[in-house]
Amino acid sequence: MKTKLVLNFNPEASNLPITHNLTAKYGLLVNILRAEIDEVGGKMVIEVSGKADSIKTGISYLKEAGVGVRPIKEGVRRDDEACTHCGVCISICPTKALILDSKTHKVIFKEEKCVACGVCIDACPPRAMEILI
Amino acid sequence: MKKNKRPSGPKTFTDISTRARDGDAVVMTAMEFKEFVKTNGVKKAAKEVDIVTTGTFGAMCSSGAYFNFGHSDPPIKMQRAWLDGIPAYGGLAAVDVYLGATELDDSNNMMHGGAHVIEDLVRGRAVRLKATAHATDCYPLKEIDTYVSLKTINQAVLMNVRNCYQNYAAASNTSGRTMYTYMGKLLPELGNATYCSSGELSPLLNDPLYRTIGIGSRIFLGGGEGFVIWEGTQFNTGVERTPNGVPKRPAGSLAVLGDLKQMTPEFVKGLTFTRYGATLGLGIGVPIPILDEDMAKACAVTDKDISTAIFDYAQQTRARPVLAEVTYAQLGSGEVDIKGRRVPTSPLSSIYKARKIAELLKKSVAKGDFVLTEPVQRLPLDRSFKPLDTRSEKEAMK
Ligand code: SF4
Ligand code: SF4
Image (cartoon, rainbow over all chains, first blue to last red):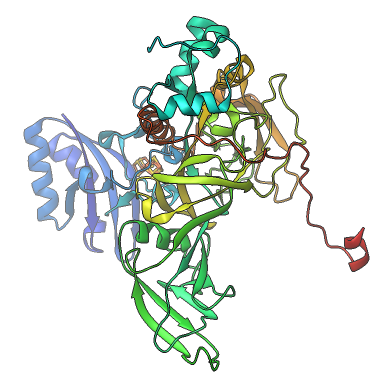
């Protein structure tokens, strides 16, 4: 199983070797998609893969360590009513999470591909894309 | 398809609009018509089809709306006016103002410009009107602070001096930094390319020599009905064209007008292009009568036959270098070749909404609800586009 998580750290938690621990203690493969950490803490977008049970215990470990954990779905949202399907975002999204459906001519947001990089946010003319992390 | 008697030769505008008013016209969207021509040929299409509906939805700068608020008691002659903080031009009369779509407030907050206020009004919201004046004997009030909505405003009229560009330039960026332009976010080192036309669905690309679209044409405007009122500004007929008359660069454009009270938020949208500013997203559709085979041929145009140039927006000059000549079919494929690199593309213009407009228009034309009007005057065929140079008084007179 694979899942994408958005992690929020306070300064103390930023010093923990969390990716190492997720791998060593819970047998999870961790792929860091995005990381921004400074003196006031930071955030990280990771993709973890492993057994469903191990992911669950891994998430509990993170929470106990004081790390905020949220699924990526809660990280980036599109306001479907505001989207005009103009396609501005399709050439700038690095992971092709925003693509043009050739049948309906609508722009589809594939949340599971999104890595919350934020590139589309200020490019969307009606501001339909929103980043919550 | 209806099998009523049809003249075999060319049809007049009046024949077609009368038939449409009676609900007897054969109407197709631009998408359907192109398919029909592919299988049946131009001759048959010219004979059997009466009207083709086109559509476009995109950022249309050079838009704005004028309002008449009615008189306050005591009355005021508004000199400076603001709608939700956005300055509106009051130098017309006492209570008439014009609000430009790209206007921003004093802090240059691009997230909320004139276009957003226009959308708010269309959504039925109330907006705050503030105005100041030098008092006169007939207009003694010096300032007013109140709320208005489309219910309280007398005339609320969208009046745009340049919309619906016939073809448009495409953009990319060879520099090392992201550029924020009216063509959207252009990623560094040819990271992407953007273009802005609904191509084969676009009204003026289906009537390249302005035979049927002219001053007085009734059009779909922002969800309501409007009219073409003049040639659009920057109208330029002197560009290179294909043998079928399709321009290869931005050419004609339309000045349009329509009642804001009829419009819907689906087709009137406040937009923000980061670090460029606010602009209005607007839907326009025009029905084109198929007068003869030439008109059928014109409306059979496809994205393969329409081309434009990708300009390098890294060059911040009037004459930007051309990076590539491409067709809309290439642009629409999602990737184009620029100097040997595969560059992903973005349309900016919503093809989804353009198609929807063509479909809505088809329905109301076929029902006889939307009445075609013959232009009272044709758009010019001899306009050039002059630059603005720094010149002396004498040079300006030459
Ligand atoms: S840029 Fe925004 S409005 Fe345009 S298609 Fe993408 S999400 Fe929709
Ligand atoms: S934040 Fe936007 S640009 Fe980045 S991956 Fe998600 S959808 Fe794509």
